[in-house]
Image: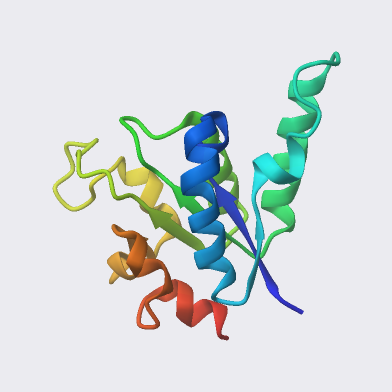
Length: 153
């Protein structure tokens, strides 16, 4: 059975990002033989047409985070998307393997060690955390980085 990875991302809110960027991430993760749980595809079918839609989508997303084997969180933006941060926090609290992606070069912290708020890195190992942090798209499938190693165990 394939391992599942929750793809926490804000790209479903933008038509162009949903059409152009999101499929690239899904394909890269699938190339590691992972089953990708992308929340916009899985849980946002209903839209905002019926009462309670937002609650149901939020609950479905958190259930997917809990039921997945790991999380891959896209953290671009200053600050990163709030929903992605909640999903990431839930995954960290549930002790899920955590992989972070940010190719946005702007720093969002005063911490000299980490490029984002230090709490975002609490799901990563203390030493060699950079192995779990991806700063370019090409790194996602790098067999020497943590994601590829985890996918093959």
